[in-house]
Length: 416
Ligand code: EPZ
Image (tube, rainbow, N blue to C red; front, side, top):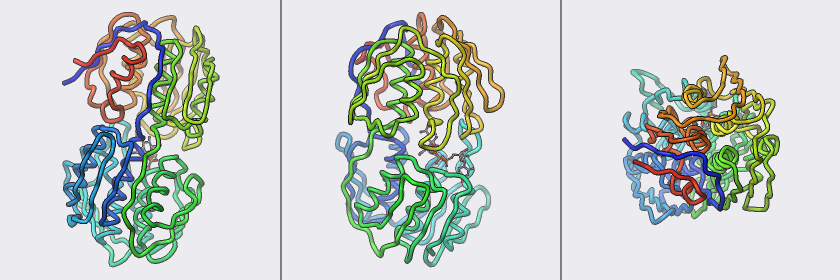
């Protein structure tokens, strides 16, 4: 099993390019099932979760070819409408395929997604919306069997602005006869990217990025070519690396407008930011200021996925920062590993109190989930001495060539 080995204490200097957004690529790959045609998608990072989605597409009968960061998916051959259990468990967000498979075939069988490192990952909002759209759903022996003669458009209010549920409804409604309206929809940039891709296929969707999305179903969808938006969470992670290690870094291939909450926090911890249309330069302060309160919220609030990398950086602040994790039940597993490196963090339910310390010390630590693993990288870059991070496969789910990118801006990091 791979490990990352970091010799900490080196400031970071230089430019890092941010790759395409994992959480935009995954629903867009699901959307390729809808059009029985050729889809060319640029900016697809080569990540474990993207490879899992490609496996699902091939299992459904699609052909998928990668050329650099461009994926070509031809879904003409799609005929299967069952996602095997092992594929479902490989990646929790496989549930996003349900809406597209149902819209194409009127039938879908998959297994209930296992929980994951972040706690239970229910899909009740997805299924409640599907039932409103006339889809019959049987749940038995851990499997979900869905079928419908046709998908009925509906007015759907989401009890919580779930990203995945919003995306699944958009996918299912794209080919329905009539208009579906989602209220209290999630507003993440990845949802806007999915709308753009679907409309490029000939869909008629409006409102993504706001809490009301209208989908006017069409009879068929055509081929499309699209470039995926940059990954705002990878960008936020690099900012946390620069904040923790010190120095000046320039991020390219970013959309600052997707990162308002993250940039606001960076200013609060004392960074000097130079922001242009597709670049961010961060000059880290000599020592970080604490950030009084970070509450994770649906977009445009502070993103839950950026919580752990930021926390790792703030363990070294000149004072106390308080986090409230409002989105997932169990997203503090990195805390225990950070404390082994000398951090002073107290967790009570959704609250984490981070008292800044003068230094962290390198240690042997273990990644417990994707963003928690990234937090350990942030801490390792700043720590005195060597940090070895095991179970790196978690980190590989969301960061492409992380060690190469960090080495390119001065980090002493290698994979063993
Ligand atoms: C997406 O997950 C992202 N994943 C997550 O990123 C991200 O953290 C999350 O949105 C929130 O922004 C992808 O896009 C592939 P949700 P998703 O449905 O769709 C509860 C990463 O690190 N909920 O908005 O699963 C749920 O339990 C990953 O890249 C229900 O209760 O998130 C959670 O507490 C991690 N019932 C909250 O809503 C449902 O039917 C947010 O979930 C669905 C969700």
